[in-house]
Image (cartoon, rainbow, N blue to C red; front, side, top):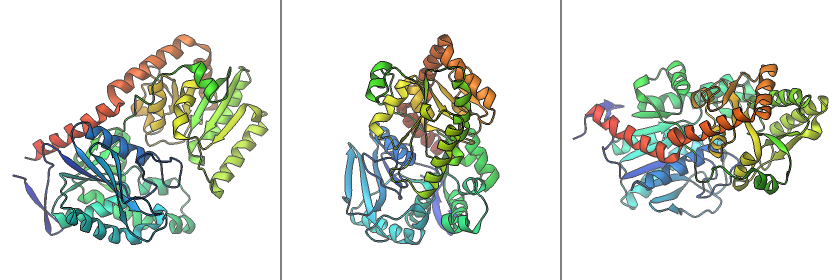
Amino acid sequence: MAIITRAKNIYRPTFYPPFMKSVCMLSIHGYFDAVPVLGRTDTGGQIVYVLELARHLAKRDVKVDIYTRWFEGKEKIEIVGPRVRIIRIPCGGPSFIPKELLFPYLGEFTDNMEVYIRNEKLSYDVFHSHYWDAGFVANELAERYHTGFIHTSHSLGILKKKQMPDTVENEERFFFTRRISSEKEIFDAAMSIIVSTPTEKEDYVRDYDISGDKLKIIPPGVDTTRFAPGDKEKSLILIGMPKKRIIFSLSRIDSRKGLDLLIRAAGRVMEHVEDIVLVIGGGSKDMGEDEKEVLTGLKGIAGDMGILDKVLFTGYLPDDIVPAYYSAAEMFIVPSRYEPFGLTILESMSVGTPVIATKFGGPSHIITHGTDGFLVDPEDEKEFASLVQTLLNDMSIHEKISAEGIKTIMEKYSWDTVADTYILSMMRSSTNES
C-alpha cells in the first residue's frame, strides 16, 4: 500500500512501484523520431537521451511510451523497437512550433493526451517528463490521475538567463519569467528530479531552493556499440582527410561554446607543430543569423592568426558520420566557457580518443584530470596549448588516456549501466518511503 501525502489539495503517492513494468515518457518539443535528424530546430541531445533510456529500459522488460507533439502530418504512432513506441498528440495546429512558443498550447496537449490514455485504457507505473514544457504537462496529469511524476530538466531557465544580457529582447524571445516560474512549480511538485552531476544538483539547491534529497544523480549514457574504437586510417579516409593529424571539436556554433578560445590555443600549437588541422564540426542545417554571425567571427579570428587554411568548419554533420570523426582525431576538445555535462565527451572517450575539456561545469565530474582525460581553463591560452601539444607529442600519455577513458565509460556511462542505475534508484525511492 502506498504512503499518501497531501499536495495541491489532492492526494499523491510519495514513492514509485518497486517493479516498473510501464513508463510514460514525455518529451514534447522538436522533431522526435525513432531515428532523429539531429541538428534540426530543437532536436538534439535530449531526444537521444530519451530514446536510449527507453530502449535500454525495454531490454529489461519495461514497456515505454514516449509522448511528443504531432505536426507536419507525421504518423500518430511510431514503433521504435520492442516495447518502445512514440505517440504523437496534436496541439496548436499542424505546423512546427519552436519550444519557446509552445506554452499556450500545453493545456490542449494535456487534455488530448488524457483523452488518448483513457480511450486506449492505458496505465503507467511512472510518468517521467523531460524539459519544462513536458514537466508542465506531467504535473497537470499527475493531479488528474492522483499519481506522481519524475522530471529531468536538460537545461535550466535561471542558468540560461544568467548567461545572456538581461534585455527586454531576450525576455520577449525566451519568456524567462514564465519559464522560471513554471520550473519552480514543476520542481516542487515532482517526486524526484534526475540530474547529471553534483554541480547540477547544486544549481537546483541554490537557484530553485530544492531539497537535495529530491535530486537523484544519474548521468546520461553513451551507446558503446555505436561509439566504439575504430581504425584511425580507415576513419581518415572515410571523412576525406587521409594522412592528417586532426584536433576535433563538435558543438553548436555558439559564443558560449568557447570555439574562439580553441582557435587561439590551436594557433599557438601550430607555431610549433606543422602537420595538424583543427576540425570544428557542428551547426544547424539551416543557420540562423546568430549562428552566421558567430561563424563569421570565428573565421575572422583564424584569418587574423594566419591559420584559416588549417581550420575546417564542417557545418552540420550527419549522425552516422560522427563516430568516424572521433576515431580519426588525435584528440577531442570541449572548450566551453561553461558546460552543463557534455555527451560528446562520453562519445569520444568511448571511441578511445583522448579528451581535453573545460574544467567549468559537468566535465569535472566525468574526467579525472591526468588519468582518463584533461581539464583546462579554456581562457588560459598557454596551459590550453600546452595540453594539446602533450597529447600530440607524447604517445605514451596519449595511449594511457585513451585506455583509461574507455575503462571509465564501460564502468560508469554505458547505457546498460545507466538503465540499471535508473531502475535501482526508483526501487530505492520506494523502499525509503515505505
